[in-house]
Length: 239
Image (cartoon, rainbow, N blue to C red; front, side, top):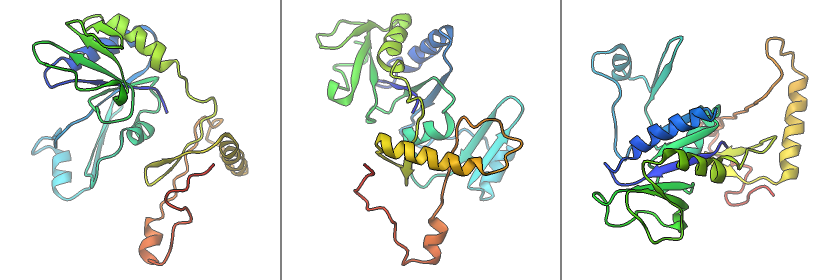
């Protein structure tokens, strides 16, 4: 999983402004940056009458619009996709992911505070708050940065979050979007067995694999045979 930092705070306090400045600072340092904005309520990015809106209005569960320069997907959801899953699926090429919001997620957070908007901080150290960006001093056991000093905040994030690099050979297992803990032996076993099977395939048009994903969808099997049971006990992780 790539490093993620959440910028949190009350509405109107300046989270987006700080994120804009942080993006610029990270780009200067040569980082590839991705951002993700959490919406507390429903939102709409499509416009009535547009082709994509007409596709959705006709009943399509997902619509993608793509060009040589950018792409976008509009997908109807039955439940919210977790932040980690979104990063796994769509933001894996980024060196750092900056999330706006997600104050309830168990990820490192920097809270933006302005005395004109706040009476007290929304988060505490137990919420994985690692610093405060503020326009007023705070008597807390955490670093407090000037909210306009994006350079120092960026340097702090690099030191405290980004430098915790990914494992050289990352192996992750998710079942129903739940991450299953794996020890080093099991990770190596999965990697060796999986790559051994891939080496037997004739993949003439594919370069040396750098990232390999396998998805097994058991939903259709379950619909056909309701007696089918998962081979994995619900609370028994691999170890």
